[in-house]
Length: 116
Length: 115
Image (tube, rainbow over all chains, first blue to last red; front, side, top):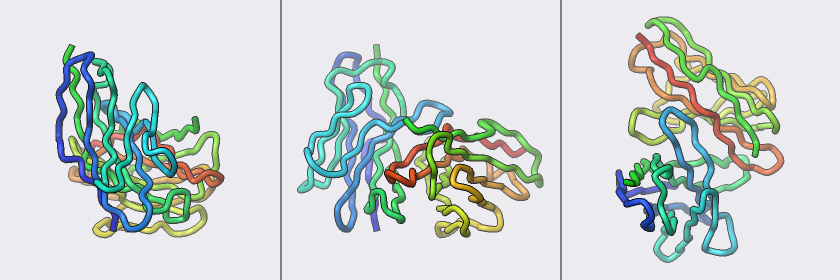
């Protein structure tokens, strides 16, 4: 069975400072990892994904994430936070990207609050 | 990017009535669509997986007679909450898997409030 853990319910950071939102995963076989952002009463917006290749993945809005196989982690990072980055962030994992059984399992979400 | 349209975005209904939520893939074909439910300040819980032209597969604990899913075409899936009750109030989100690439695209969600 696959699972995702986001250990922090909320992350607070000052505008301009670097931010990290943590995610660890458990999956049998190769992991396919995703980050999504959700604004209030909205659906999910795709930020980035790791399928294969370079462990450092760059995504939308200046976000990036690093796949670490030994630590089974896929932390989301941004060098300089903006107030507009304040939102709910979800990490997700799939064990079968693109296949017939490709379904995402989501973490519990981390609320990012960026103070001006 | 690909677009998934979900309608209605908000719906309020009386207890005992049925509500239908539509999920359309506007510029891609979705062989598979997923329906999620999200409670306030919680994660997305997968309810069911629907494949075009066949019966939906429901996750454990989800009542299939309560949440009717139809996936009649490659661009449309519907979720009907039958005999809705206040505890069914939630945010429902659909996701379509593009047939050609396997990528997933999410709708904007539908907030259901049952009075």
